[in-house]
Length: 256
Image (cartoon, rainbow, N blue to C red; front, side, top):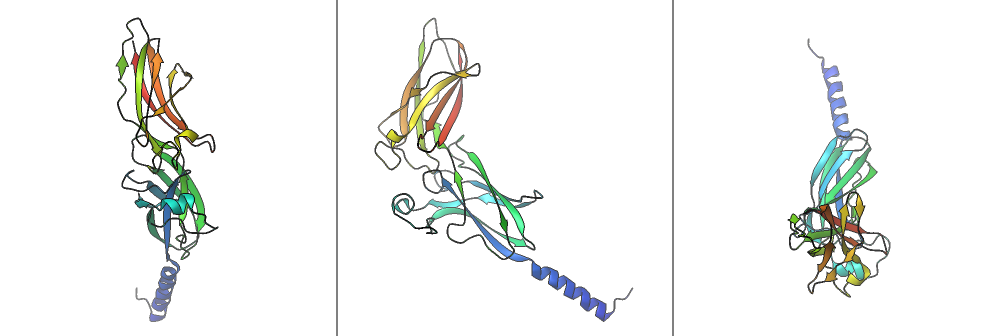
């Protein structure tokens, strides 16, 4: 079947019009630690970013943030006005989507990747219009709660009581999610946080034991006492009473 020139021209016009509707649209994602700086890549492994169509679930883009933490003074101490850009030098993930229509886009951020067990997940959703980028200022910013907690020395998997109570030493590194250091009197002040360890057994927790500053930034130590055999979980935690920010890791412990 031959297609006439008029029909062919009409088809080409339709195709060209459809193609013209699709508009490259950049979206820039940054993740900032709660009460701290942007989460960079070098010390934390970055944050995994996933963009989906919120209505259909279609995967649109994914990757890991790369870059630094940003400028400490600019973010944390210098006064700034509404809409001031704070993210100079801060890690980001950028994706350019070819959008033909407005789409409700959902961003999921999971991180930081290091230390193991520190990762949390946050999600945000907003409309994005074709050709209207979301890249001005700091871009699309998500706030990541928690603290980055890791054991500096491993806790034994099992201990023997031998008829008397035993003490378990806790050595932990506790930092903000951006790997920003916690120190006495520092910008992230040890004295403003509650850092400790507690035991879980049979669905109940014991009273917590505080962890003390160990003389180096973000390093803390303490010990917990166990008097009865059983299967326990050691919870090492950090809590900021001013804003509810909380981080925790769980370590299994068998006591015989």
